[in-house]
Image (tube, rainbow, N blue to C red; front, side, top):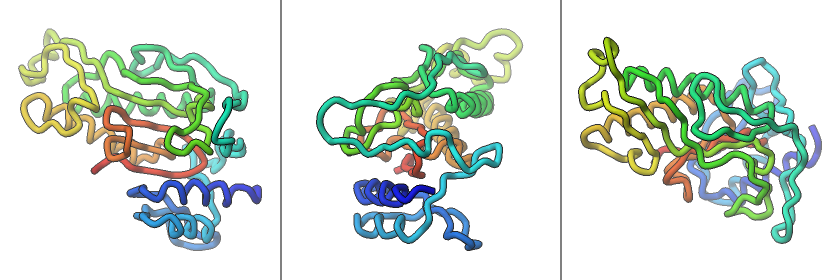
Length: 251
């Protein structure tokens, strides 16, 4: 592990003093497991990260490393942003298609495919069918983090995605009998419109979004999982695989 990692994470944690939850890894040689810690004070956030030896979360294949972990994220706060050149690909979705193709880092694809599986399974549970399309607001975008301009956005590495909602088609035939009448027609589910809905079909959409978000969190599918509780994320979920763990979705 390079010596620059703790200072990078410390600086980021200090800037993220507004976080509801930061995932702090276990101390080396300790039996203490990774746990969520509520952090409010900047110096306390930095102290936590300095005191522990930061390690990325365990990946599905048991490898604790992610190929982009060693890329620098600290940049100048002004001027043109120069993003590292990483292998990227156009991806349309496998289990559930994206309405527009996404342009992502190659290593991010497996995460998205698993997300599509969670979308499908949760939608079948709530609506009796999977959505036809996943709606996103963007993936690759070479830029800074808007609220912390000394950090490169994971979008600049094609290592992030913003999900705004889902489009469902009309259900017909024998499948329709297992679906409530009010949910048989085509409809749209949007984070902005339905996250806090509590009446009619909107309440079902809220249930779907919240179940999905909780399952993404429980599975630790991404290292950073942001939603309506995070400033600037009232209308979408943000998922990425940066070298730190942040979860801030529920109010």
